[in-house]
Length: 72
Length: 394
Ligand code: HEM
Ligand code: HEM
Ligand code: SF4
Ligand code: SF4
Image 1 (cartoon, rainbow over the protein chains, first blue to last red):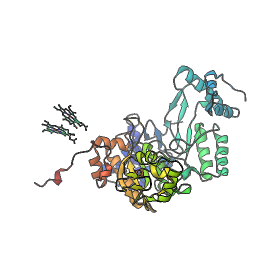
Image 2 (tube, chains in turn blue, brown):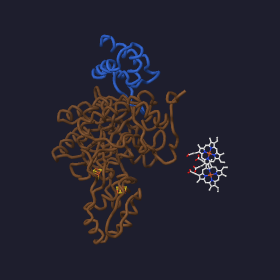
Image 3 (cartoon, chains in turn red, orange):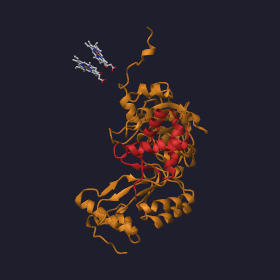
Image 4 (tube, rainbow over the protein chains, first blue to last red):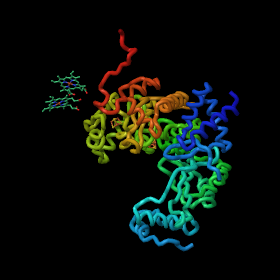
């Protein structure tokens, strides 16, 4: 799968669960790799780009989660 | 700057013989708005017996999910100087060795961006820089990293690995704790900066069972130096200790936890087969006794402080391993353990708690480790023979 496509899938997954369930990095890797038959390492690389560019961020609430940054 | 808030309760803590953190915060307050309001908020907490810190939320600098611990005041109107009071964790060098220049550099950076308060070192190891604002996080990180420093671990990540001074200063070190700490840090950069586990994971490296880094009680993976073969005895030196007033029976033989030593007034005997290499006798009679010649380490797993369930001490998972670069055997095992944890761990469940919940046999099977008597954690806890369905001949 194209990396950009994978990034879109990940972003939408995080967006959809915002306000419902906080996702950990490993939740995202497991779910996307299972649903789309992509290797976890590939999902991780795509997620890494989203985090490095600031489209997604890590947050902490008793554990570490991946979320969309709040609008300023 | 004169003190902004009255602090009668905190002032009590300046009395007495010990160094006082209150005195240090007051000194910092001469030049720092943060430290001024920190005194005020702390006094309020002491008065009301309740914390005024909130935590969590946004952490870190771009791309990292670890290294910054978000702290906010819940009374920011009263104490605007600590409205944000985030902690920055900086990865310390292995063995905590610094040049004076390096320390000055860190302090100069923190005077510029933070509260001027530090904690050397936090219990995990890191250089802890206490208290800064959200908008200072990226600049402080940029300045630290431009000079070769990096952030440490926090949250559900590998925490900054740390070790005893090892072979740099100690003849008892059975492996190079500094080198291994450095290599673990390099190898697991991703796991350190980008939290991906159910919860935290700590590595602590001790060169021998004296365990100056207390790895057995506070590391998910405790790597403790040990040896194979007989303790080397210099009988002449043993007799010298006796001559100089050491009560060898009481101080050495009777204190041996495995009861494997004897002393007839002339010769010290050790039944090395029963020795568990606790280091007691060697640490007491440094001139007379030396460790066996084949050196390596024992790997233990699982210790933690009481949070979700009670405190745990690490227990043996690999009785003896040679630890020399490139450490592939160890890294391989670590990754198998993490896979097991990732697969079964609940949110905020440490790997030791997971093993307690699922059972040690399941852990051994999934990580491919061979059972060994040294893994029995306590007598009478594991007396049964386990077998699985496929072991039974039908
Ligand atoms: C003065 C009387 C008794 C003495 C001194 C005694 C002593 C002991 C000792 C030393 C143990 C081992 C404990 C351990 O190592 O954890 C034990 C276990 C046991 N005893 Fe007794 N016992 C006595 C009476 C009884 C009676 C009357 C019964 C049953 C009717 C009994 C049933 C058991 C059982 C089932 C265990 C095994 C528990 C386990 O380890 O799971 N005992 N006893
Ligand atoms: C189906 C029947 C029984 C089962 C499943 C059973 C099971 C057990 C188990 C699991 C232990 C602990 C062993 C260990 O931790 O090392 C034990 C110990 C013991 N059992 Fe039984 N038991 C049975 C019958 C009996 C009977 C009929 C008696 C006495 C009349 C008895 C007396 C003891 C005693 C005294 C111990 C303690 C031994 C020690 O640890 O020092 N058991 N039993
Ligand atoms: S743990 Fe052992 S090797 Fe390390 S400094 Fe202490 S005594 Fe020396
Ligand atoms: S190292 Fe510990 S167990 Fe071994 S002989 Fe010395 S005191 Fe006994």
